[in-house]
Length: 69
Image (cartoon, rainbow, N blue to C red):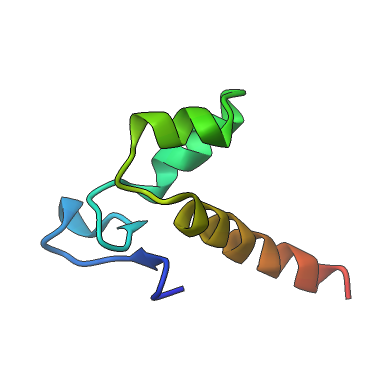
């Protein structure tokens, strides 16, 4: 995940952010849970690339996929 999301105590108090940005990963989750689309999120946070956002989503799915085995 280090290529997608990072945590550093000096960046937003250690909150997980998209690598190379100060955009918290939680904001993407909030958008999606609220019924917004990935495109709407990306319009508001252009510093996050589509590829980075998709990689983060896929990473969070992996533990769930492992539970079904």
